[in-house]
Image (cartoon, rainbow, N blue to C red; front, side):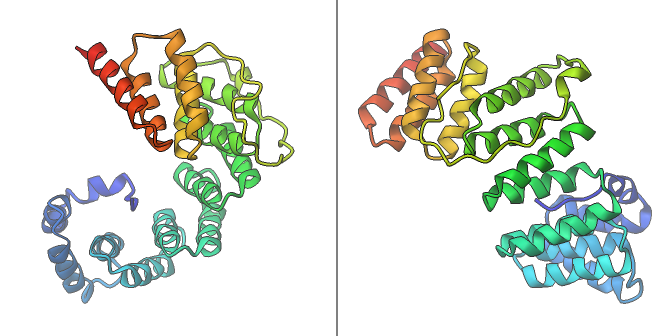
Length: 278
């Protein structure tokens, strides 16, 4: 997903961008490209036109042209954080991970506390399985934005990957409380010491101490996303014992059973879920 700064929603209301706005919101990317190129012949440094041209190329899968456009945007406006974000998105799609990371780091030199750039950077570290750097980046986000649940959820996943299960559960609990609107005291958001990386473990349920089905659900989602279907079955089975009338847990366990090729068990859970939803 390419990023547009919020102020563009205001700039797009200007009369000179009325047609641009219409094509953008109607997703007529070809027409948006045509009018941006026409206007840029006279206004070659117009920031919004460059953004919109790059986005029109992106949605038409003209990725090289999109990349060149955002490079031009950064050249004209080196302090424009959104240009770095969008360029990194295209580089990520091309699996040029180091270039994407370096691009985001350049953006962060300009705006060290830009939340979206930091989240994007942490996400790339997760993709390339650089979990220590992902944890470090998520920890920085938490220190700057202590009520952003995405950072806790991301760091929890990274902790799972290196076997730091208790820390993962703690972060998932924080994320849950933030999502529910309960604002914890600042003391609960102290920066933790960097974890020692462990060998990947096949026992992601080791040393988990929680009877909160919502936290177990978050754990199960991570296990499903990681392809740990057997562990996901165990996690959702515990959640079902605690909250046997929640159809979501049966549906999630059914997904895990399907991942294991256990079609009969999956069908049984889906029938139970449908019955509870009536």
